[in-house]
Every structure is written in structure tokens, then in C-alpha cells.
Length: 118
Image 1 (cartoon, rainbow, N blue to C red):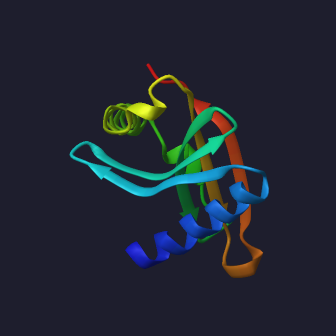
Image 2 (cartoon, rainbow, N blue to C red; image 1 turned 90 degrees about the vertical axis):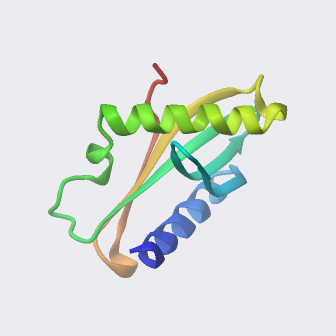
Image 3 (cartoon, one colour; image 1 turned 135 degrees about the vertical axis):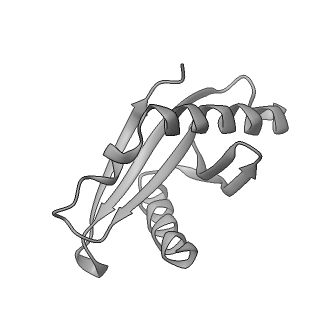
């Protein structure tokens, strides 16, 4: 559900901004897919995939980002860089922010450099 995803993407953005990252883009689309958040940490461009699981007992949302999803995110990030040449020389990384649980009791797990671009 899009509206539920938007809530958790905003929560992830707030968490990352508290840590000093700055928003570049949210929900950036191309024909390969979507980037939930694109942030900057200094001169590093950070592509962030946000996941949510309503039960703390379910598998961590990060675990659901398998090799096929990673390849899709890398291709989408390549398209973002092509569309925004000012960022072409920036170091890039792929982070995940996963929430598990419900409401105010949700636990946030931020994994920096969750996977490498192939």
C-alpha cells in the first residue's frame, strides 16, 4: 500500500537527517524501478531502500532485498546518475533502512553499505 510505504519512507528520511544526511530526491522513478530515497552524506551519494514489516517476529525487511532487487536498484541508480550528471563523480553507496513492529514501537535498523554495486 503506497500510503503506508510513504509513512515509513518519511520516517527513514527523518532518521537519516538526524544523522546528518541531506535529502536529494524521494521516490525517484525510471523504467527500471524506483529509488525510495537519495541522500547525501558529505560527498557520498546514498541510495536508500526502505522496508517495513508490521511484526517484529517477521524476517527483517533488509533480508528481502535479494540479488535481483539489488541489480534493479543498481540499474535505477545508474539511470539517476545519468539524469543528474552533477553527481556523476560522487562516491555512491546503497543503504537499507528497515522498520519492524508497529507504530511508535517500531524498531529502525539502518544498514550502511548494505550491498555493493556489481
